Image (cartoon, rainbow, N blue to C red; front, top):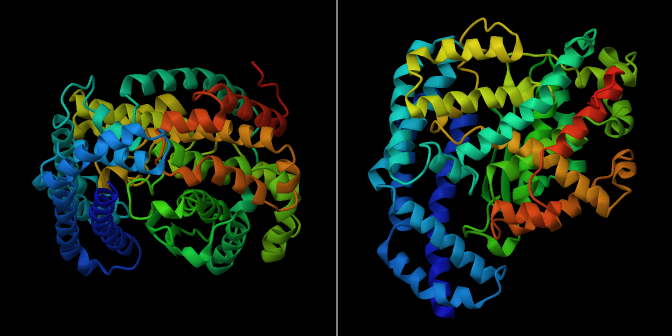
Length: 505
């Protein structure tokens, strides 16, 4: 049996090496690659994807897993060998449903589409992207068709990102969350707007980058195993446990843009850096789902990085970094500014309270596209109508409308957005569980100390990688299933204090 396990690990390592090589090329495309490399990069990614898929669907791998499954069933459920065989079998069953040519087509197309988007968005050019979107939608439906028996064509795409989730479950969850958020938003919007002009002065790029990196070092992001670079749309990526990178973007006239992008991506990266090293180069060496992953980025960005105790410690350091801009700005003014609630156009810049409406709009639109009830040529109008209806804002152009997010232009349509809101919900549950275990966490945050919180997250979430399903991990870490009430309670409590109004009902 040990010989078979060694063979399994060797096969899985080859697959992981190919996928990691593709990830390096993807990172380079988003950071340093010159425009002239786009065509070759699409071809290279297609080749690597094809090779990885061929190895992932090799009948010999299937036979090996069939031989190992009885052994796995004899072991305790969370034993690393049992988990490895179980997750590898699940991945094998998924991959064998997908034709290799389709996987290669998707890799080549999404690389070309991403490159086109980096030029089309600044040019406000939706017409150029429409043919790419049409192909993306076709490919997305072809993927869904490989998994018959689902209730909705989005279900298999969602399942890839958030295993076990379905469109109907998410729709119900979002409807209940919307019902809780709507009265909070209405009450806040009725108040005089908070002045956030202190954030919109000139903040030099290098000083912003240095300050953000100082904070995430304190969080626990290990720069010996990571780095930060600039990109169009911030992301985190992992090539190994020893090489987990993040990207950000800097707006020299908006302090919050780069700072909170850095905090957000560090949450993703610390999750990957915290996975058990013994899982390296296996399917266990990944965050378990998009929702759990986003819970970490949103926890560090918002629940910690926008909290009052956090800035009671770090604001004097920020003032020293930017004395002309913030030297005479009181902490209370700054704290209110970074937590201003204002319906807006851009998801990544949205405040905590309205953010989930942005996600719900995208989720509903991609379901309609997959169903065929919305045509791509009508997508901008549908987008603009939902922004007017849900957020009360007028979309002025494609750039800050339908072209703003990279997901549909650098990936498939379906399964891309629900994780952000699932993560928001889970972030409050996980932080509540950490505080229950360590009541001094808030005092430590006020001293700029994060080792206890980081340690709890590593022990209860990070180290497990994909040993458990998302549902199992959530119940183990949070003490129960995913619930929206802790998140709504967090929002009501925080923003009642900021705006001086009662949001308890």
